[in-house]
Length: 141
Image (cartoon, rainbow, N blue to C red; front, side, top):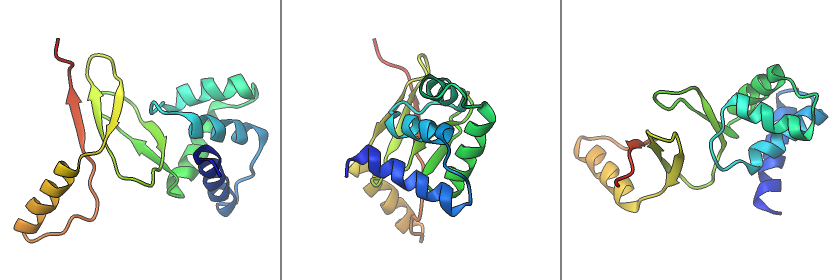
C-alpha cells in the first residue's frame, strides 16, 4: 500500500470511528490532506478540495479537521504569526523551520538535537515524552 493511500485509509478509519459519514466532500478533503506537503491552513485545504469536489463547504473542512485531530491522524500547528496549519501524522518525528519572510515551512530531523534534548532532560532529572521544535529563520543572503 502506498504512503498516500495508507494515510487516506487511516483518516477514513478515524472518521468512521468517530461516527462521521465519509462523503464525497470528505473523500476529496482526505485526498488533498494526504497529498499536501506544505502545511496548508483550512482555507487552503478548502480551496484545493473544491477543485476536486465543488460542493465541499468550509464548515465541512473545519469539522473534518477537528475530528481527524482528535483521532490523532492530523496535527494542528499554531505557528507564531499565523493561523493554524495542518499536516497528517508521520511515523517519524520531525521538527520545523519557518521562513519568516516567505512563510514556508520546512520539515527536518536531527539526531544531534534529539540526543541533546534527551541529555538536557536527563541531567535535570526528566525523561522527554513529547516535544515540538520550531525554528523561525531567515535565509542568509
